[in-house]
Length: 91
Image (cartoon, rainbow, N blue to C red; front, side, top):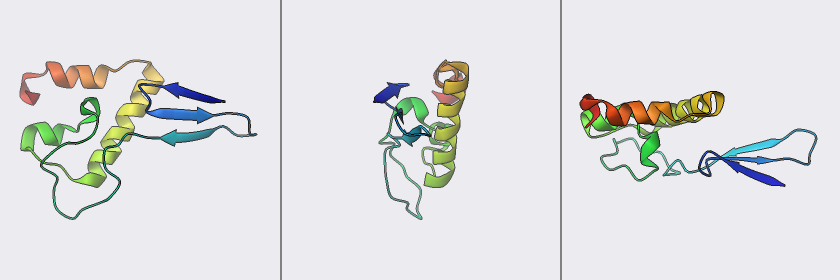
């Protein structure tokens, strides 16, 4: 049995002794030394650096995205993304 939650971001597979978790939809599967200047993932998980600097590094952005997903799971809301979109600093 599979269960999709939070816009196909977290898949939980039950049936084994321990549920298996898979995170998906982080945009890109490879790491580059250079900064990214185009965001190809889900925009609601975009890190603040992309809005303020126009570029981002893969590793810190992945940590940001996982943090947003965990926050959304714990609080059952998408407030991080909503606050970023409403802030004049990120427009």
